[in-house]
Each structure stands twice: as structure tokens, then as C-alpha cells.
Image: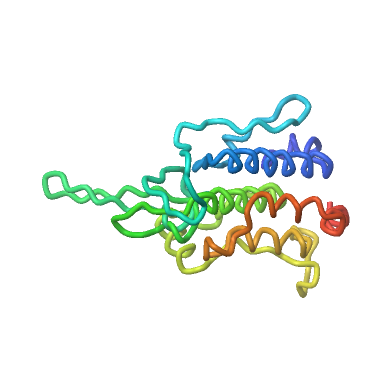
Length: 219
């Protein structure tokens, strides 16, 4: 979606189809009490007919209850929630090495010296980053060069900007987010994991006719 030579293939119908496939796939996983824990574009495969296949369950884990916490999270920076931005300090011959696991996991998951998360909400956060990326066709946090800087900003509440139709001084170069889409993304990457919707709720929002009508206006 970032390569201009492929953008003619990335039309509205396929955008909606792929997002729907991701939601259905993740809803199924969570219904079976499985958390993916590394949801990102590289782990979303498309068939020739643009059918979604979610892959790479190497770090997935089964959970007992959505309200309970889970430890031992791993994954990819920028798609991670805060608690998963783990800082591990290793001292070898008096040299401190900082290892960061950040990016597509959520902000509640950054806790120094701990790796704790609440389960399904982490996958929802990752989905929000992916949805923003698919609509904007921009690499997440591409304007922030250092992972540590990005991590600190996300922990403090920073999210990628979304230009709304009502925004003043719109330019032709700006990607406009329909208000319904922006609201879904904002809810899904909310700083409080308890306030993020489940994938079953996301599915109901996504298939609502009013949401789909808004999306059609801006693609």
C-alpha cells in the first residue's frame, strides 16, 4: 500500500474487504481464547482474491479471561501497546545495553522491568495502527526516527494525526479520515485498555451502513 505502482490495486472495495477479513479473523481467534500478540501487516497475508489469512502464531498465547492480565509479551515495535514497550537492562562487563520491544503494541504495556498486558486489547491496539496505516498509506510514526522517542511520546498519549473533513485549511495532499473511521481508530488505540472495543464490537461498528457510507465518500 506504500508503493505507488501497486496503489491502483488498492481500491475502496479491497480496502473494505481486507479490513473485514482482519476483523473476522481476529474475532475468531479471540472467540477461541487465543491472542495473536504480534499483529502487523507482515503477518496478514492476502490470497490472489484478496482473502485475508492471519499468520505467524509463534508468540500467540491462550488466555483464560479478558479481564485477567497476561505476562511475557513479545512483538514488533510501533504496533505494541504501552505495557509491551519493554526496557530490559543487561549489564555485561559494566556495559548497559538497552533492548526495546516497542511499536505496534499498546501504551498501557510499558512498565519498566515488567511485561504485563490485559490480553485481547493489545491485538485491538495493533489493529488500530494497521487500520490507520491502510487508510493513510503511510508507515506508522514515519516522522519519528528514534524508537525511544516514539515510545516516550506514545506513553504520554501521542497518536498519529487524523485529518477530519471538518479540519480547517484542508489541502489536496492531506488524507482525510471520515469521522466514523477516525472514531473507530481512536477507540481502538485508547490509552486505557478497558475502553477499547472487542473485535466483535468492532465488527458491528464496521459493518454499520452509516460507517460504510462515510468511507465511500472519501475514497
